[in-house]
Length: 270
Image 1: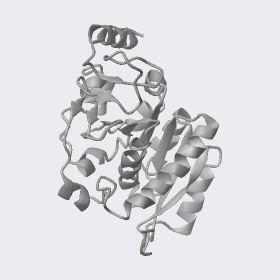
Image 2: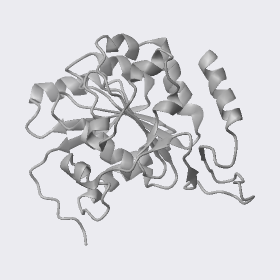
Image 3: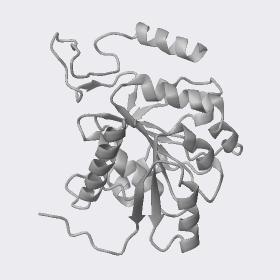
Image 4: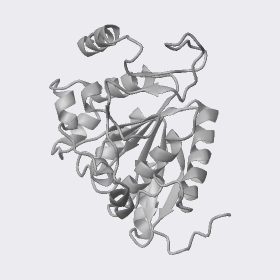
């Protein structure tokens, strides 16, 4: 409750035309006219320009819209958003059966693609507290860990980063946490998800989670989200590992399975 009060006071304090805000349809902007959702002003949130060669090296292909392979993620984005809209879902977890499947690469590419879909703003949260890699993939320098926030050492707005992509904010992490499953299943975590989920009406939140079979973190956290995307790395998982993962997700809203690291060549449509 105290955190929410502080957040409200902070919004009141900075409620000026240049403060961080997501302009939404039906609202009047600083110029006295109706604003569109794609009009954003990032002031409270730090904006960082990304390095193209670094992204390419880490297989973040969607940042370069000239890359024909980015169409793959646009198709995935459209299917996911359609399903989430049908059900009124706002939160999605991305996980995998085992490590090495590339679920973080999928999460980052998907987040950028979804942010370009003008009807939504996107938050990508690195909740792989065993092996956080979102910042590494994007080339972001991170000053705080997720635990700094949960220990009340830093405000959420101080941790968020806009990677120079309109309608996208990233909640990165720079440190692994040994007792992460306790936090993932805590009331404090549930309160956090509810707070960010309802902060903006048009926001979708993507949580990058650890592999299902490597730790109990994902299973502990999944009750907090609306739906799940399972990433399977080609040649990285055995049949039994995939079956066990599907069994663990049988009671969840599984959107589908993404086959990553496929040997098939993407030819595009030009």
